[in-house]
Length: 164
Image: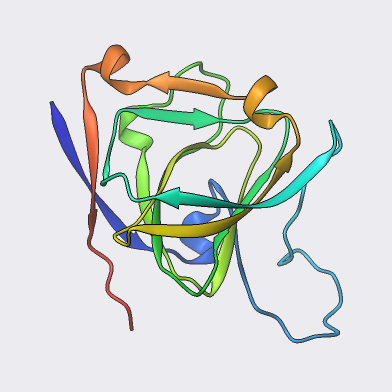
């Protein structure tokens, strides 16, 4: 079964169950709760640029990292989509809790520890993303749920959000 997931415009309020949205701030602003609240103490932080090729907007797998927060943002101001489900103790996310967001190229997202995520997805041939996680996240902290095997479904992200 295929389920259509409408991507909504991201705001700090509607993304709060999954993490934070960080927009530009004036230079010299004091550190406060609006800054990314990072958890990278369980290993060596890794900050790098990854080039992702367009792979459509369908997904059957969703992943989480329990040992660290993760920050993602596109370079060159390109918009993109991300599907997420809130962190929790269960080994699989609740299907009803999966949401999709349209993320503008002028911000980045910080995923809380344990937030399920699928993507990034986008329409261009490729986008370069900066990624902040631990150096071994993809080897030692990569927990994936196969939604097709678990629930018999796949999702397709539909861009319902409009730019203003």
